[in-house]
View 1: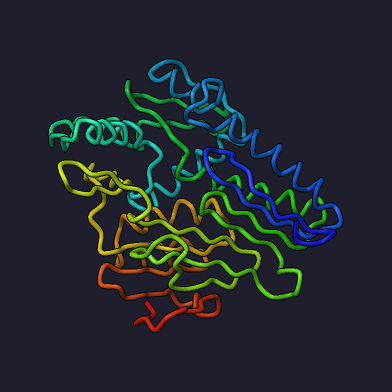
View 2: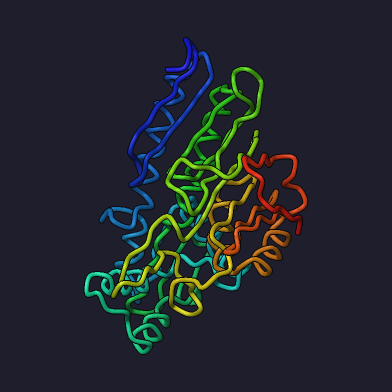
Length: 320
């Protein structure tokens, strides 16, 4: 607990650590409402829960269109939008490919090109059809599945911040496993400070800080999770075009946006697309901007980022 009217809490929800800091005379009530909502969203959107809407849609692949909640339809529509915008660099349909690479790790054998190509046919965004007017979704190809792991936490952060505001909190912060969103400023009036992990150093070593208020900050990088196959490291972010872990000139991408849903999707997409195309994506999306940490340890930032960025060491930093 931070003070008499502010809470700092940690929970494990949506298969990740959730940190909340709420400054309000009603902080405990706001926290309880946010946690209740996070559990509801997990029950609706989890890939692993049999009763979730995601599981219902995945089980009905090739059958009749499935009636879904308007909330789920909104998230699916957003996912389709960012898939099209990023030329499939962001894709909620990659679960069959993820499973293929997970088995490859267990077998210590890289999947064959034929297996990758065959699996990619299940991962096309075209296999998911949405009827917004009827609130129905349909998976057309047997073996296709959706997984909202790349956008669901961002959406949950947005919803929690809506709750904070609706219940009167002028200042709050939530971190869902790296999906960060803040409203207002800290109790002393200063902006919230979000440290950005250095991709080559142990956890907790940051190369810059983002000074933010009323924005979301999300970072994607190949350093977070990887597996070794026959002595070679393969990171967990897959390219939906090639079917292999993305071969990128970037070590990490940090996206700043007023929408955590958007930041969640764009950080993955920009990482997969690389510096040049990723920069174009950021500008086309209309988000606040992004910071790119390259394979050559250079830092590039889009034009609106400078006001938010504080470098913690002397790095080469360029504007794009």
